[in-house]
Image (tube, rainbow over all chains, first blue to last red; front, top):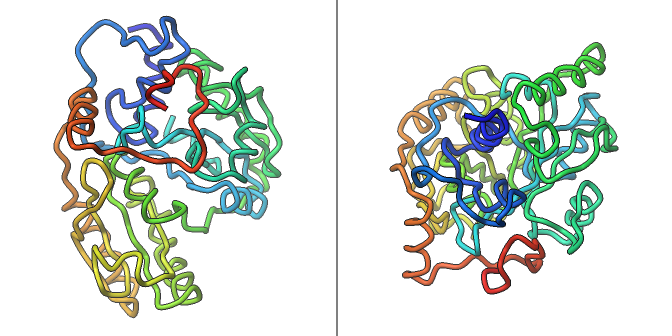
Length: 88
Length: 234
């Protein structure tokens, strides 16, 4: 598997879902837009490993970064795919 | 990558959901049409960009190893003075929290107090557990100080572990513990709830088809402007 695809999958896993829930978001920059890569359809499975512990709002995260002196890992995402909820 | 992320304050704002936050997202990364579905950057503790903004880590780094190396080298510059994270990492409101946890297929911990002060006091108790090595990264959290919002799921104050339905429109309370529960009882309740959380595997296209059949649609306060999303699907 190409390493760029491995990174995309790893990020998707870290976002919380185990397979490839962000096809429309992460995959979009690769032409043709929105096209699914060859292979089986992505199946969402319950994550079995801990994920990234995300703050959900900018203001709370910034306050905690300032207080702790820690850098920030920033990754925004739309909680919908073509207006369907429950999927990135 | 998850291990490397622990040195950071990780933030994942939900795109198109808050006008003020959208300005921050646009300042991190914005395409020719404006705000896109995702944006990514590493920031310093004051929120200033340390890296160029992009659509995703894969766009910036290409390979997992390069991304992890960037996380590690960035974290090393701040490690000496970094303090432990103590705040509970929460989502904005119950509606978004159910959606996000459904998408992530994680359990949702709902912290509900009789008023804002009580809710925040309870959140501080939960936060200690949320950052423990046993539970970190296992769940999402939302703090409610308005009683009515959670009434449909559970009428009682306290801490609940909820399994959202597949579309995040509702959910089922797996475990509930009262606000006055001691730390040991709270820890046990959270561990039990997380253990009981189960979701069935979902196939992306079937999930979307079923939503269309049932007329399920997510409305965002801000119009979708991502050029990769067809107009009719925005």
